Image (tube, rainbow, N blue to C red; front, side, top):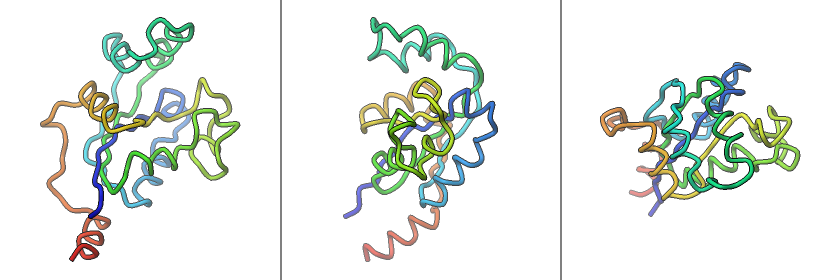
Length: 156
């Protein structure tokens, strides 16, 4: 049986400023993941603190908070087969200098501090991060995308 998951992906302020939103969405769609929620927003201090709670007390914590609030983000929820691991593969490792060629960060980011995109690292983080930015009634999962139709046929 296939493992269907949800994950939180955000195009960070530098990615929005550089006009990379469409390209990032294209890569996720072409992979076969299903976009089930999306919005552009200015992150509040409260949202930023919840998002980066695990880094509180670290020397770079305030820089993270300031960065995520430096401009709008595009927050998204994606669904699909092993979407958490797959999306991390699409994004590349945090430091773009070490990211594999062809990943979002290798292609578009220069430094770790401005690496264009965020993605959840595990199912617990995904659900926690989704809840920070989306209410349940903002998630639209009542349709089948092509990948789901294909996977359903494979399971028959």
